[in-house]
Image (cartoon, rainbow, N blue to C red):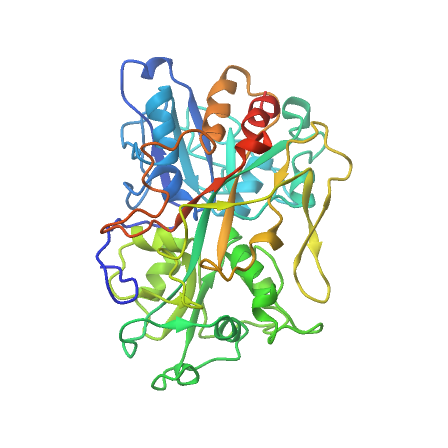
Amino acid sequence: MFKRNAMGNTRTKIIAGAVLMSLGLMGASAAMSTDVYGGGATLPAGAYVGFNFGTGILSSNVAGSTAAAVSTTSLFGNWAATSGNALSYCQTGSGNGKKIFDHFDGTTSLPGATGACNGLATGGFGAPSSVIVDPHFAASDAPMSQDEFNWFGLPAPGKKTKYTQPVQFPAVIGSVAIAFNNPDVSGTLNLTDAQVCSIFSGTTTNWSQLGLPARPITVVYRSDGSGTSFSLANHLTSAACGATNTAATHFIADQSFAKVVSLFLPTLPSNWNGQSGNANVAHAIDTTVGAIGYAEAANLKASNITTAKVATINGFDPYEGLPDSILVSTVTDRVITGVNATSGVAVTGALSPAATTPGCMILVEPSTYANSSTRYPIIAVSNLIANATGNGADVAAVRGLVGSAYASHTGVTTIGNPTGANNGTGYAFVTTLATAGIPAKVNSCIN
C-alpha cells in the first residue's frame, strides 16, 4: 500500500502510462448527450475524472464504446452527472497533449482525434475509430508557449480557418511530491529546498549525504514532455535554489527534464531512470531501492504503490500541506516566451501578433506560485485549452466542461483536503477567479 510519511492506507488503482480514461454517464438523456474528447496532462487526471480506471485502454458510453463510468465525485464527473453529457480523457502528458490539440508537433502536421489513446502516432484523444473529430479540449500543467500558440496555425492556415485560436483557462492545482524508496528511512523524511536542489542537480549522489547509511541515489524522472517536470523546474529556478543556481549553471524551466538539468548534467547519469507518465515514475520508484523522484501527489495515491513514501519539503506534506483552494492572480494574452538566460526562470510576454480573440488566453504567471513559506511549495497549475470558434453544436458542452472549474463544487471530493482517512487529495481548487469575470469569459471565448 502507498505510504505517506510511512503511515496511512490509501486507495489503489493501477495506472499504466498514457492510459485512456474514458467516462460518461448512462441514463435517459444519454442519447441526446454530447461526446466531448480531450486529453493531455497526467497530473490532474484524478481531479478531473477520478481514480476508477485501470490498466490498458478503457471505454465509456461515448459514441461507439461500452461503459466504464467516471467517478461522479470528480470535477468532470460531477459536470457530466448534471449535464447528461459524456467525455473521454486520454493521458498523453502536457507536451504531447498540446501537440495533438494543435495538430502540429513543431515539425510535422498531425491528424485529429481519431482512433484509440495512441498519442502522437494517430493524434488520438480517445475518439472511436469510426469517428474523426478535432479535440474539444486539452489539459496542460505548463501554460502555452508562444511557439505552441503559433503551431495552432501551422502548416498555414492550420486550425485557424475554423477554430481561430486556442483559449486557455487555469482549472485546478496539484502538488508535485518527492517520492523515494529507502528502507533505511523510518518515519518522516523531511527535505529542505537546498537538499532537493542538490539531488536534482546531481551534486547529492548518495543517501549518506542526507545523513543516512550509504546507498547510491537513483533519480527517476519524466522522459516525456511533462507539465510535472515544468512545475518542478518552476520551483527549482525560483529562490528555492538560490545557493545552487548561478548565472552560468542553473536549472531551466522547461517541460523536458533533460533540458531542466542540462547546465548541471549535459548527459544524464547512466543510473538515472526516465519514465513516461506520473504512474510509471511512481512504479519505478516503488520497485527501485535507493530511488528518489518526482510525481504528482494524487496520482501516487492512485498507483499500486507498496514501498515508496513521500517526503515533506520544508516541513510541509504534499497532501496535508496543500489547502483546499489557492488564490491565484491572472493576466491575459500572455504566453511563455522563453527563459531568463542567467536564472532559467520562465519568462512570459504578450502574444505576438496580438490575439484574434482578445482576453481569452488566461495565464497564471509561473513565478507567482513557484515557492511558498506557508504551504507545500512545489505545485502545478493545470490549464484547460479549447478552441475559440468552430465548436458548433458542441459549444454548450465544451463551455460547461471548462466552466465546471468555476462552478459549484458541491459533491466534488477528488479535490480538496478533507479530514479523515483520505487526509487530503493532493489537489486544490483555483479560487477568486469568479470575481475576475472568468466564468463569463468561458462563455464569450468559446464559440
